[in-house]
Structures are given as structure tokens and as C-alpha cells.
Image 1 (tube, rainbow, N blue to C red):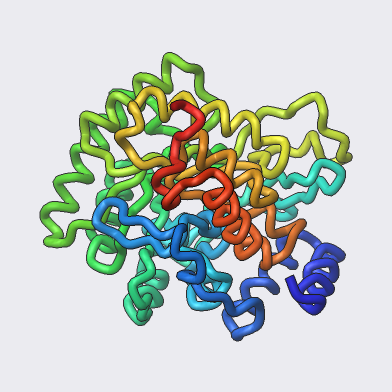
Image 2 (spheres, rainbow, N blue to C red):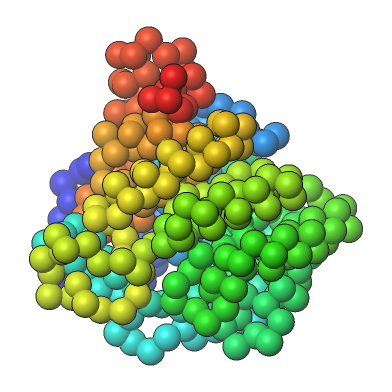
Amino acid sequence: MSALHQITTAALRCLPAETAHGLALQGLAAGFGPRERADDFPSLAQSLMGMSFANPVAVSAGFDKNALAVTGVRRLGTGFVEVGGVTPRPQPGNPRPRVFRLAEDRAAINRLGFNNDGAQAVHARLAALDMGGTPLGVNLAANGDSAEPADDFVALVERFAPVADFLTVDISCPNSSNGQVFLDPQALEGLLARLNAARDASGARPAMFGKLSPDIDDTRLAELIAVMRAAGIDAITVCNTTTERPASLQSAHAGERGGLSGAPLFEMANEMLRKVYAMTGGEVPLVGVGGIMSGADAWTKIRAGASLVQLYTGMVYEGPGLVQAIKRHLAQELERGGHANIADAVGSEHR
């Protein structure tokens, strides 16, 4: 990472977390930040679900909720982009302050509550983009005050199917009243049936991802995976933030309500990733999220079963150059391990 980006990252950490996030987005939207190629390490390229990924690294949903800086995020060198979560109607989210850095723990807690500009505004921005072949995803969420959250998801699929390469059904947010309604297997089964029908009726065929919470037991996890596989889900994102608070946390903000992300989530997320890989027999592509702070962390998730990885909190502490650093590390690990390409390494710790 350049000295300028290091200085900028350090300066942003002196500001309130949500203010710093907003400024970072504005900077990327204005053309500041790294300008890296996505395809600079050929061994990282792979084809999944009918999409071509120049590399497996991206910034997770929640970073650019409103699709304000998609081009800037692509210039970080990412292999794909995911925006959102997007709700049908604009939503202010929860009262501020609602984002907290836990610097001593290299972590963050947020209770944003799906604050976003709404589907109409986000759709207009996405429809105007030229992604140049980079896969584009939209993270979908129900409005917090919706009486029929399933209807919200159906409306979102109908709107975004024509402009997205994949849609993520986010059933795992701990910060919204409707954020985890569909962690009930029967409710999820009904929802996915309706979403598949809506996607088919749209005439488009984006891939469908499901995003899970780390705060579910193994029995419930197995039930949800079975429902997703029966519905033909294309990929599973593991995982969202956690409401658990490890005893190791040192920050004064450790007791704040919301979802914990960053380094303390890493091992919990990895354990879940390994379980989901085993439950699916490696037959469903997985997106590994949670606690990626370095290239070594991303490599651990690849070997545990992730075909793709996403990060967010890591950039708060390591800066925007983290994407490129991860790609470089992954390419080096592939060469050291004698792997022909990234797909060859996925789930390698299980073999």
C-alpha cells in the first residue's frame, strides 16, 4: 500500500467510524484510492455458476450499500462486487451512534439496521454501470417495518434480476426486526420457492446466494443447508456478523449492541465454513466472510472450503491496499503448494 493510502487510512481512523466510512466511499467514488487490475494474477481466475471471476477477492456487502462507489471498489483489484443490503423502500436504519471500532481487538460492532436509499435509487445506479465483465451482486433485505417480509424479497428479485449477476438473500442480519425471520427452515423453504418463481418469471437468470448467521446451532444449520440445496441455491455466504462477545475482547465498546466483525469472528466463521463445506460435500460454492485481516487469513478460508472471499473490517485497519496484498499472497501460496489454480486449492485441507 502506498504511503498516501497509509496516511489516509490512519487519518480516517481518527474520525467517528460511520463518518470515516462515508468519506472513504466518497473518495473511491471520486476516483481516489488504489488502481489495480483484477486479472494481474492468472492463477486466481476461475469460473463459477456461469460467471468468470478474475480473482476470488471482494469487499463484502455493507460497505457500499447504495452502489455509490462501484467503479472505485472495482479499482481496488476486486474479482467481483456486491452492493447492499437493499430494501424495497428507503430506510434510515437505527439511531446513531451505531458503528463502533474495537481497535484493541481489531474488530468492529455495528447496528446500522440496513440503512439505504431503497431499491429504486440503487437500481438506477446499477443500470447505468458498465461492469466490463466483473460479476455484480446485490444483497437483498426486507424493510424492518414490513408486515410481509417475503413480499419484500420477491419485489427485490423482480427489480434486480435483470441488472445483477447474482442476488444474495440476506437472512442473517442481527440488527433489523425482519433480519432473521427466514432462519426458520419452513419459512425459508417457502421464501426460496417464491424467489425461484420470481426469478424465472423475470426472464433473467442471476445466481442466487444465501447468507447465513454464525449464531445458529449445528442442528439448525443442517436444516437450513438441506432447504437451500433442495431449492437449488447456487452459493452460500458464510457468514454474517455475530451477536456473541468472546471473553477475549478488550475494547471499552465490547458491550455495545449489534453485530461483531473483524479478527474475533475469524475462528468462529472458519468453523462454520468447514461444517458447511462438509454438509454440502464441496458441491456448492461458498463465500468465506468473517475476520479476514491478511492474505494468510484469506488462504485459510480457501483451504477450508471457500471459493470466494469477502472482507470489510480488515480494510478499516489495513487500508484499501489489503485487497491487492491478499491476491498476491494467494498467488504465492498456490505456487508454493503446487496448485495449478485457485479452484485446485479450494477445500484442500479436507483432502
